[in-house]
Amino acid sequence: MRTIVITGASDGIGAAAARRLHADGHRVVVVGRTPEKTRGLAGDLGVEHHSADFARLDDVRALAATLAERHERIDVLANNAGGLFGERTLTVDGFEKTLQVNHLAPFLLTALLMDTLLASGATVVNTSSVAAKAFARLDLDDLGNERAYHPRRAYGDSKLANILHARELQRRFGPRGLNAASFHPGGVATNFANDTTSRMRFAYHTPLRRFLITPEQGAETLVWLAGSVPGRDWPPGEYFEKKRVARTNPRASDEVLARELWERSAAMVGLPS
Image (cartoon, rainbow, N blue to C red):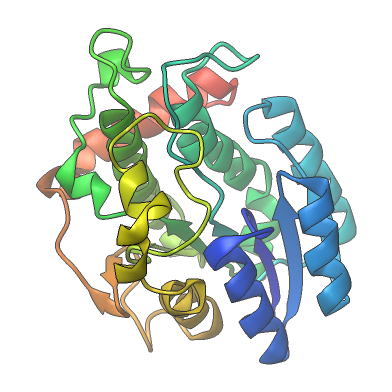
């Protein structure tokens, strides 16, 4: 039985993965932004739950402290929380919201839990997206897209950052027993894109929705990565679609970019690089 922490677990593929992994006999810890939804899912499953708004880094720090205190062992950290937003807005921490919620917050959470993750020989799974290939134009000198903001680009940049984060986690900590991966769940019929003005909302909130897959189908790769053995069942550090290594943005393989993004991200959230 593994202890599996899933963020963004109050809805969508996070909730579907939590249900499946719990049914498979794992100890699941669910984390969500909305207390009522998170508490409701946890009540249904009889599992531990925590609420945290990733648009507030103090919430992330408090979450990490609580998880580290409550769990000597965390076998899987699934960084699944994220979103696609509308007009460019800044969080209370002063960062563009898409960048913070999708990348900086999970980067910080992972870093703050690193001692526990290393002691556990853990797996870190980042939920990315095909948007990393379709829309990303990641500029290290303008991570918040202040010069040329568009919701799709901001989202694509953050999803490329998720892949780069997983690759750099593997490079830095793979020799010490940590394993990391990122994946695209597919186009899933969820409440995703509720807050965006992007045209992507039409796929999720119009009759086009019928062409999307279910949250249960979208969660399959996450469940597989969380419940299987890295190095035996899948190669660590890679990006996956439908349980297979997949192609994504060519820049996702840029080791220099991954390292520099790590250093910029660490500085932004107040951590040593």
